[in-house]
Structure formats: C-alpha cells, structure tokens
Image (cartoon, rainbow, N blue to C red; front, side, top):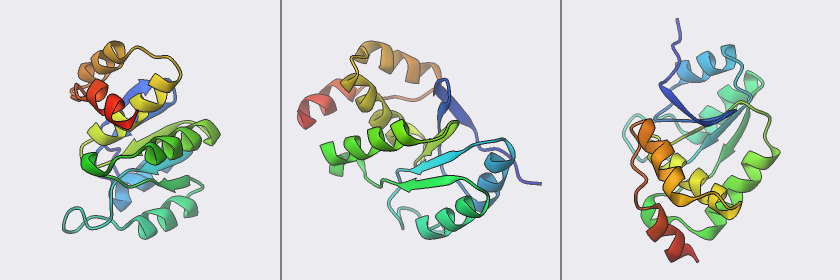
Amino acid sequence: MPSLPPCAELVPGVSVAGRLDADHIEALADAGVRTIINNRPDDEDPGQLPAAEARRLAEARGIAYHHIPFVAATLTREHVDAMAAAVAAADKPIVAHCRSGTRSSLVFALTRMREGADPTALIAEAARHGIDISALPAIAARLG
C-alpha cells in the first residue's frame, strides 16, 4: 500500500517534502493533493523518478504538475518567479519537493518575502519542521 512521504506544512495548503517516488504520488493523490511542484533536476541522484514520469503519474491521478528544477548554486530570480506563479495559480493542497525539502522551502520562502514576509519568521517556521533555510537573507540579497 502506498504511503505518504513525510511532509511539512509551511502555510495552510502548502507543504514541502523530500524525494517523491511513484508510490508517494499515488498516496498524495489519495490524500487529496491537487498540485505537485518538483524542484529537483533530473538525474540528481541514481534511481530518482524522472520528472516526465512523475508528471505522467501525477496527471493520471488528476494532480497538476510543475517542474521548476534548480540547485542552490543555480537558483535565479526566474526560478522564484516560476515558483510564485505556480503557487498562485495552483489548486491546493500543494506539495513542493526536492531531495530533502530544503530547496523547496527556500524558494517558497523567497516568494513569501516578495509579499512582505519577515525572513526571520520564515527561517523559524522552516526550523520548526527541521529544515534549515538560514541562508535565506544572503540568497535574497544575491538575487536582488
């Protein structure tokens, strides 16, 4: 039986998770998730579910799927723009994922900073879920 991946709800309707496998997508669909946002580049890890296959599985279960891949060193304003647009347009609940949940938390926090959220509060919220985005202010400054 498919099991849900560990998810951290950062705000109502938006959660982050680590690696998703095919069984996780099935379990998320059964749990009512409406949108998946994948922040992992393909081939980041051996055996990783390719984005095209994840999209096929998600869409077959009625889940909208967005692929916005990056690693910390390649994160750009365009990634933040794409994440903001995906979250704004998405049916909730949303699960954004990467290898551990950290990148997804970070890019979501950057979208929230644009809306005036306090970076210290965003860092604290992620930390309550065991996610370290303490680099948020430095990354926000780098991105301008």
